[in-house]
Figure 1 (cartoon, rainbow, N blue to C red):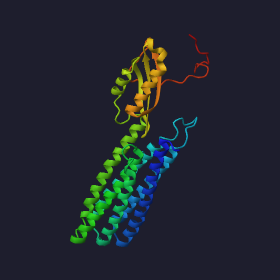
Figure 2: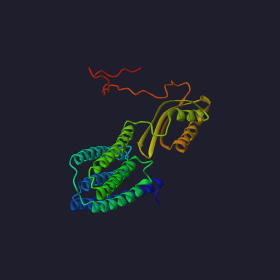
Figure 3: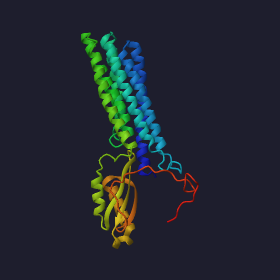
Figure 4: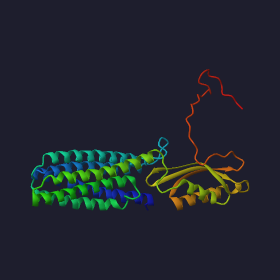
Length: 320
């Protein structure tokens, strides 16, 4: 019987496999269609689809890596692989946006005639494939950064297909080919904005930022409300990946509750899991006579000590 984690990974992977297959079909259709109709817009969109196919494959690989077990060299396993994949996906989206802007400028200066009806039909097929692929990814796009970045890639493709469809209709009935340049520029701006959001969120996780939706003051307040807790300090909250949030803290326990320290820590852990989906916790219990500190501890660099306790003269360490 599969665990909830294994079931989630399998569901996400299945969505990626379907999305990859549909995106591959779209790539072939638009590349051949662009060559057949002499449509630079379709060829450019095919290049866009190729980059998205690469992003989808990269995201699926990241999910597979995340299932690898933790070791004594990587105690958190490979969960961060999905964040690196999201960062790469967001970066590729930036390049795609600039590429579309450049292409739109070229088409604005030198509009070209194409087989508008055929271009419209092929772009419609591409749009249908994009929407079906997006449907397979949408279910997990809200709570998984890796899936969200891939979902945005597919949505970017769908928007590009809509632009090509509108441009094809206008060119078909008016012959005003310059409209394609304006539509392409709008597509580039939408994709660029989405990519910046992905890069910002991935960077926040890599910098051990507080997970989205969690307020440190509120968490500390609820921890202090647990019976027997006097204070909380030296607290850190961060995300290991989109699905795993972690917390470490020193919990100052009242002297008369020290024999119930295990119960108190267990109650705090259940509250954190229930209210904030913080599933990985490291709590150090202390008595009220211990030296306390700030809620947020400032980390500082310290020089490493040699095995003999002195870098300069090899003197033995002083004992106190």
